[in-house]
Image (cartoon, rainbow, N blue to C red; front, side, top):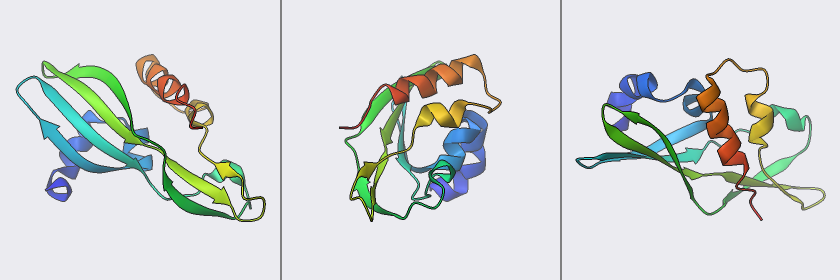
Length: 121
C-alpha cells in the first residue's frame, strides 16, 4: 500500500522525513492521521569513518505536526541507535545538526528541535 502512495505522501511530509525515515504505516481515523516512521539504517555522514553497527531502536516517541486537511497529524517516530564497534558506545543521530544548513520552514525546524529534546538514554 505505501509503495503505491509514496508520491502522494511526499506532498504532505517534509523532504527530510522522506530522506531519513521509512514510512511503516499510515493510520487514518475520522479526525487524525498517524504516520509510523522508522529511522533508516544509514550511518550519519557527520560520524566520518567511525565503524558502527545498528542495534535496533530507542522507544517510540510521538510528535504532533500541523493539521492536514482538517485532520490532526501525529508522527510515531522510532529513532535508530548504533553501537561504535570499537568503543562499544551507543550512538544516535543529532537531529540539531541535520537541520543546520537545510532549507525548511521555521515550523519544521521547530519540529526537529522537538525530536532532539527526546535524548535517548
